[in-house]
Amino acid sequence: MQSSTFIKFDPARVPSPCFVIDEVAIERNLSVLNYVQEKSGAKVLAALKAFSCWHLAPLVNQYLSGICASGYHEARLGYEEYTKKGEQGEVHVFSAAFSQQEFDHVLPIANHIMFNSFSQWEKYKAQGMAHQQNIQFGLRINPQHSEGTTEIYDPCAAGSRLGIPISEFASKRLEGISGLHFHTLCEQGLEPLRRTLAAVEEKFSDYLSAMQWINFGGGHHISHPDYDVEGLIKLIKSFAKKYNVQVYLEPGEAIAIRSGVLVSEVLDVMHTDRSQAILDTSATCHMPDTLEMPYRPDVFLSGGIKSGEANQLPYNYRLGGMTCLAGDVISDYSFEEPLQVGDRLMFDDMAHYTMVKTNTFNGIRLPAIAIWNSKSDKLEVVKQFDYDDFKNRLS
Ligand SMILES: Cc1ncc(COP(=O)(O)O)c(C=O)c1O
Image 1 (cartoon, helix red, strand yellow):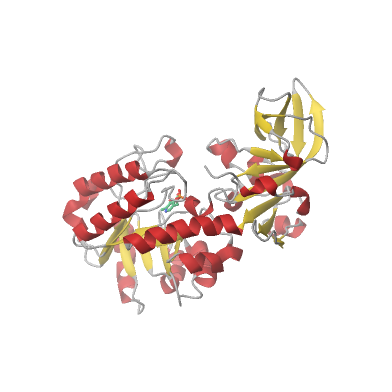
Image 2: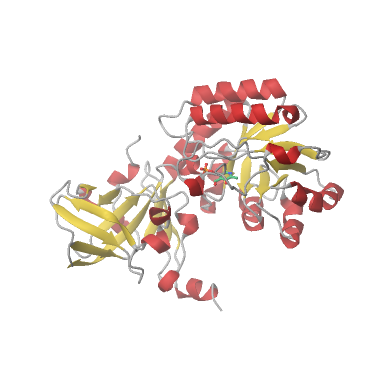
């Protein structure tokens, strides 16, 4: 694992709470993804659902082939900010189901549209095919091969609504369909992909050669130092050659691994049955994955003071948020020195999925967003939120 560039960042330089993204770390991840594109011939798209910090879109555009979106809003953000209105880069859209209104909006701005069922494809086929623009239509398949350990992140778990199983393909006509898409992985290495492709080939081999493209989805931890990048390149090349298809990958997390922190400030230190530090952030509002996954972020303290697991270091605290939720707790940590009101903490690896999932429960202020360059030390706070952002979501 790379050591975080934020070890040397002074969190007092930004308002609190604040997401700080290191553009050097993002570029490091993008270069690995671009290397895969160049060597394998695959096209790599940025999954905006994981990281849609569009201030960095010009940087992403320098390296990747476009974006993938989960519906109209992300597709439009991709079209407006990442592809310069379709002049460069592709916009791929998949939704578990498109409403008529959403499909009408997506059609003029998408290059690829992927459907989650034959009934959705049949509903929109005539309208899609009649559209003047050259759009590719695809189907999301479910190879029914689980590699995940956490059920809510496993699209191949029994009962999944995501992707069409092979049993539904019987006697279905595929004119107008030029590609297949699967997304089955989550933070995984090459071997789970290799096994998944074997399952795809075993079940869908009758259809693969008739396609122009196959999208391997996301969940590939390609920019993680342990990932077998050369193995991936070989695998893509041999699959693309065997079926004569363009391969797409659409990682999200791999763009932003180890590139961002959430800065927060200690508002109070108190004692109940244990020592508690109340922060100006919240697990449920600002880092919901700590409760959903669940996931325990590493934490750095200003001044380089060490932190660790509970009971590892002399001073133990439960780090909790400002809301009324009893379970608004990030986790239990220990520090080499006692926490003081006003101390700044940095929660590590908070760029992907965390920034896009924030909410304003209890009226909690959303974290600001800052872009830092760990090489030049340039820092810019690009967004701050206030009462109007809370009020405008409500009526
Ligand atoms: C269809 C699809 N594509 C791509 C991704 C991105 O996955 P990751 O961020 O794990 O690479 C996801 C994540 O849920 C997804 O559902």
